[in-house]
Length: 315
Image 1 (cartoon, rainbow, N blue to C red):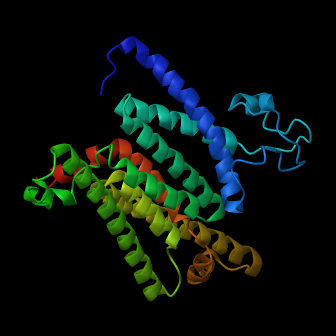
Image 2 (cartoon, helix red, strand yellow):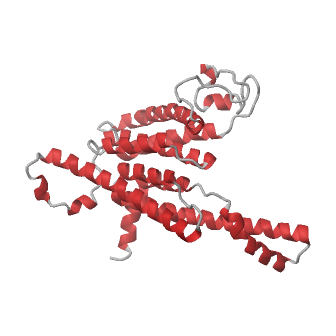
Image 3 (spheres, rainbow, N blue to C red):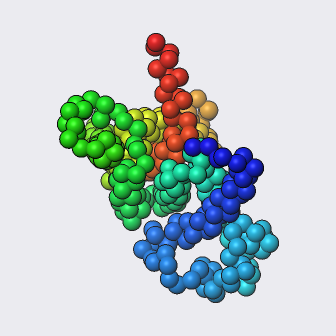
């Protein structure tokens, strides 16, 4: 849907940006408190160092962090740049969604989606955790939105039209969208569960947690079958690249350690380091939700183009 008056577009985008900054500030509260099982509503924000309440004029998104140079006003404790980054990134995502979908209900849907997924990405990166309070809430919200913002059809294309002939077209469309959303959530969660179970059976170590499975149920409910499958494959590919990079990094560090401590020649140190890599790698937990979440957000903007380009290679 296009804006009828193009002159209003910059003002609306700026308003969405400010709105995104405000929600980004709240998202920082969610990222900090939810993994610690604290309320996101009360008490008011306080410095984790000295415990002093943060004044309203020190809680302005982006500006307060820059003005205070990333420190608490009272105890001068450093405040992570993550707070600034989350606020800006959430605001930019809100604007990107608005530019993608215009002033429609789809913008509301995908702003909520990006808000939830962004929070899960940062929580998983820091705590290796994907809280049910966000994934299950997102799953329910995605299903509700499917009644009002149609989910792209994929599996429902194979449902005979005659099944809904007795219903008004508008009602039939909503039911099909809800069915697509529910099926996408189920098949996405199931596929990830199967992958995790096979990995455990083969390697005897847990590769995926139930948090990842619930995250994909949420992604499927919002995006539908086609895009959620894209998220699984793209996220797995990105996670595999990260895992391979970590293996090389561990190997390099261990080879350097063998050379320094045992005074081994470089070739011998590299061979011994390589034999010890699997043991060290088993202790390293990859935050897979980071890659799934990143691809879920990216899929809103680029997945359709990438899928068409990929199929075009075979046609």
